[in-house]
Length: 557
Ligand code: ADP
Ligand code: MG
Image (cartoon, rainbow, N blue to C red):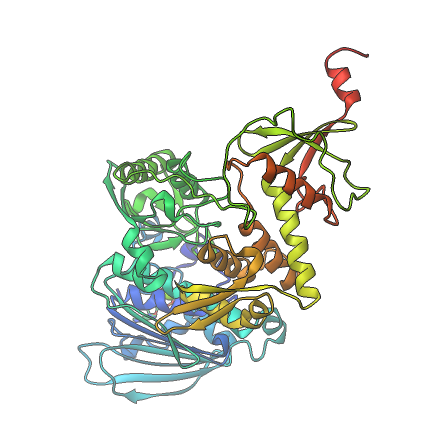
């Protein structure tokens, strides 16, 4: 279809799009145009977090010289024509807004050639106006170069984060498109470093290996299911590969990268009972269904879709995941010992009578009374008696508080105990994680980590904080990078680090403790600044006073 300006009745039905929010939004729109143009090779380059330069080259269909100027008009598109088309969109773009919106906030150059034309065309725009237009040759395809984004929009520039944060958004975006289109060869160069490169040979597992590392890729499970309405395919993690957040859940609907609470719930439903609380699966899932079953015109950045038959889609995804999981042996979640050196994992449930009645702590604080440990409930809560009633202590929250205080104390006194690893551990990072690591390396060193690049997105961990010595180092590093990258928490970085380390270093719920270990835990808890709350502010314990007990049992009224 040639490029045409949409009729106003169509325009009025289009969900208004504010497409250029940050550099990654420019990259997203340009990549989508390349994919819509049938490109099999897409090269992206960005400098200065994308503010200085973004360049996207493809080998797609190109734009005829006669239509090039029109492409930069608002609502000019070759992808839909009338209202009917809006009901069955199969392209990624359809609003004709991206090129004009980008040209309005940056300097844009475009060089494009269709396979049939003898010559290509070049155009340069500033503040949305064409300042130069001429014929120029290039192989079939299109290159769009965007410079000085938001230069005349200081208010927008101010909202951008650091170069490394913007880079990590771009890297994350590229990895998602690479996962959605394994048959397309993608490359990403960030500030002259190659951040991602895929072969485009159509093998999803190979792209997962590029993005998340070969080990993870190798362990992912195939999923494939075709129901009346939808076909679901992709890769999902075995329960033993879980992550502490949902960052590695990627959903594509007809190859469009979407965020969808519905799909997230469907997949998590399939893992119910297989993962510990707070753990989430890793998944790369494409759902394909007829275009009329879907409304893609509901979100400004086209990042959400509405299904006509939500329940059917939900159930297809859930069943597809359940089938994939049913084909693997279920591994039980691994436990992390909490107290280095204590080592004996016996399982007495109640304290014997000949043991001391009270735990005497060296430094009893006013905060906690002396507690006598009675036993453990559900391998998760310690039950203890105090002078005034019953205490239920959440072992994970309590240990988190202990570690958090110690980590911050060691750091602020510049006395971080470091533990060298006898066998260095290697870790593979995604492009986004790599950017975060680059930006936060100094902080991590202050907290006792020695992490060195090992080429090809691998890193060697040679040392870690001694307090963490018994925990899973890879899990700790990935959780740490997630938390440092997240803008959700306003905490200063040292608190983010301490919180994340404490959370992942702490003993889990579901782990049996010996009496000795329980007593030691409470002993250590008593010495913290804030024994009654974990670093996230949740309670570490519930107290049922003698008075409450008497009331509950009707002994007093
Ligand atoms: P939309 O993608 O919604 O149609 P855009 O403003 O992104 O709107 O692009 C306008 C038009 O320019 C597209 O419809 C398409 O015809 C053309 N176009 C843009 N980028 C490319 C590209 N990389 N290759 C071929 N054609 C392109
Ligand atoms: Mg577009």
